[in-house]
Image (cartoon, rainbow, N blue to C red):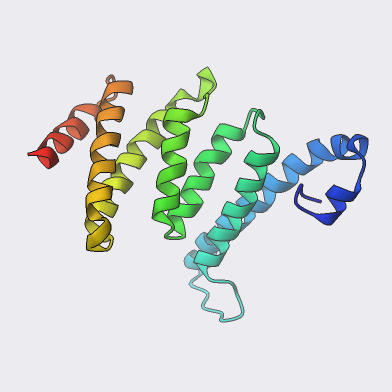
Length: 178
């Protein structure tokens, strides 16, 4: 029933609008299910070749989250879903994509006043991922990630100067520049 399905495309606007409340619940529930499964498998130490890998589950959760934010850009839960999308991508090892979502949420997305802490956390995680990628990626792209780290660190320290981590982030950026 999602917005990318043939069913959705074939239905008139009035039917699609009537389905939106159910669709938002459905997408959120599917994403949370897919994100929780690898954690549950790890706790039970189940090793079944028939089950999707944790990476596949996290990527599936990310696809549901992406569909949610595209379908409901103004929903009260969209900021939270963006954060969970970044977490799913991070857990799947899609670090560059997770970085982009964290960065977007922190600096480009219009966060509701009640969810400003998500922006702060997303900004900090963008800094950490840029730093990690500057060390772990192919040597040919390390300069790009070092630059991204510096830019994100400076942006974090400027925007979230009241956060206790801002001074340390700024010091790390200065150290990298020297």
